[in-house]
Image (tube, rainbow, N blue to C red; front, side, top):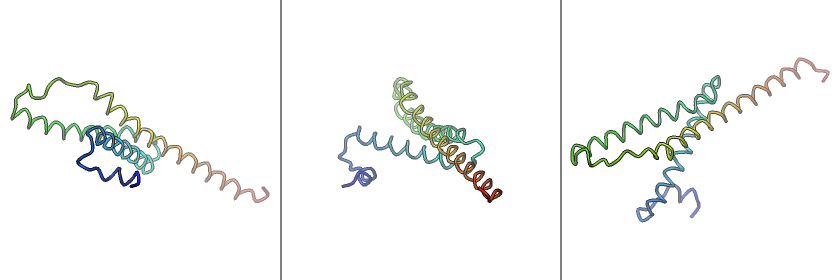
Length: 130
């Protein structure tokens, strides 16, 4: 079975670490593509669109996590949540910001390259003696 098929067909018998790795890979790829798409739609700000995509993603996941934790507190009480894990910020949020910024930066580089080609095409079209 190919790698992409394994990526999207996770069996319930896979280990938790394998499922987390697949989830992280898909998340980082999605954030890169989101940053790239945002940078292509509005190329003026390029790399700044990437962190905006990540911040929106982090905010939505915060809301979903908050809802789950609120339900947990209603059933078990506040001690059911356990300690707050700051290491998750470094393990998840910072790579998400990095990959979405990389997508925005890639969009900015693509825009710069296409601008140079358009400028070179106009310069060649104006001076037929070249």
